[in-house]
Length: 312
Image (cartoon, rainbow, N blue to C red; front, side):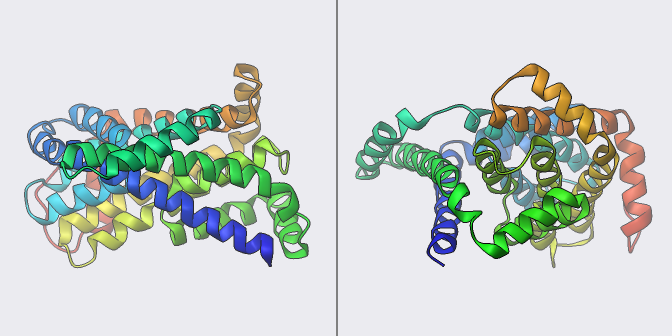
């Protein structure tokens, strides 16, 4: 029970760090990005570039999806304008994992101390920097905590049973990742945990990739929840995000061994291998759909539309 309690505390800490990091980044640039988002979404390509940049800055595809759904609900954006943004968010979210795949332990103490000092200031911009530095220190601490806890946690009988199912049955690992990510509402946290367990040698890269694929689907719950009661086009926006990740994951599952081999050839770092696998999945999915963005939008309207929507 002690190890399970520590695991829950680390998950909460990771989420807290992500939230503080997101708050700081949004306070510094969020409003400007919203205005930018309104102006630069005339084509799917432009929308994708905006989605990549926004997600890379805010460090959260869920946050960008919530902003996008909110702007659609407010009739500032239309559903067709959001397709490119959705494609971009999936690519942008990989920046966080790539960054976390490096050993940043030496930055924990200086970033934490600097962050706490900046939080004492009243000026919004300076205080926001405090949220960024403190949040980042908490995230890296949680990642190292997961890595330390991975081995003793696997000594628990029910954890061993879960790992057995995940390692030997792909579908269980896939569904487990979807459900857990839907609960914590962050694919970054879920994949970050997988990176730590992978680094500790608890399971192979192939298992980490299936968890990453499931996390990409589970994170869609945030946009879906945000779309409830927000109008028809906001609902279509959420469903398009779900379809993109579900279909992409189903196509990629048979390719997991090949992707794992490619990543192993690129780097020997286990954490970086999983981060690269996430980049490959999201970039390939988004770039594959981009030339057919308009047709993709019509498909979503045909399947989920309840009333007449302006043609894509």
